Amino acid sequence: YIGVRGIINLTKQAIEAFGIQEDAEKKLATALGKTSQMLLKNASALQKVSNFGDEAIIGVQAAIGAFIKDEAAIAKATAATLDFATAQGMDLKGAGDLVAKTLGSTTNALTRYGIEVTGAVGSSERLKAVTEGIAKVWGGQAAAAAETMAGKMNQATMAIGDASEAIGEAFSEPVTQAAMAVTFLAEGLGKFIGVLTTMSTGTASAEQRLAALNKLVNEHADISVPNLVKIYTMLGMGY
Image (cartoon, rainbow, N blue to C red; front, side):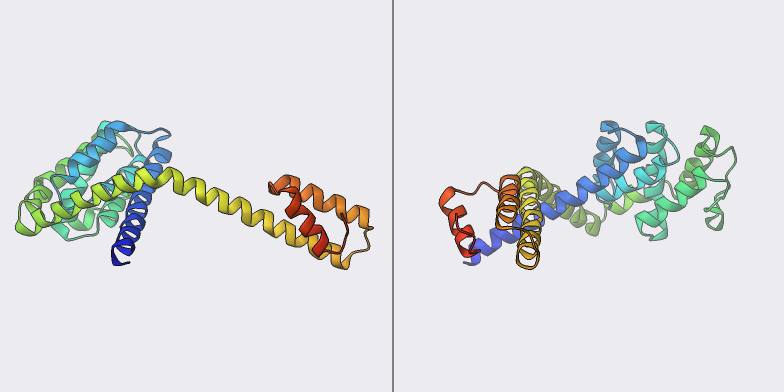
């Protein structure tokens, strides 16, 4: 029993982990208008030299990608964001939002951190000012943090997480199909109950009721003739 429960819990966690990864990748694809294999590989590479998981890194890419569509520029800004977040002990999403806002608007959200920004919104000059400003003060912070004992432990944890995501991906298709089937059956049951309520309270003739039930069954279920007979009998409708 304990072994079976352990397998069930592992599978559940794996599916949830894959779901988080899939959601992050979908947000990035939506921001760019396409799936970027280059940025996904970049996120995986940055995970290996920082204390941040690739799903969180992809989240930063998506935030920056809402304003900048150049993939190489997004990769540069993302790497700078990791150094900035590490140095400030800041949540990566919060750091990413500050960098994205600075790049994609006239507001310099990094002023309070001593970063001066020049150039038009979304321009290469503005990107250079942000990335070089961060590099000058905090360059290499993310990689240095990953080299500590705590960083190595975190790297091991993230590697296990990646393995869990791979397991979750293997289960994703059957789980998705099962969820769709449950939704279909639930919707069909709701309509079925609605028809039964109408039959019991309405003024429709027996023939009309029978026709309505036949239509519902044909649309939402593959019911054998014997079972159909049982349903009609229980309704007192004859068959």
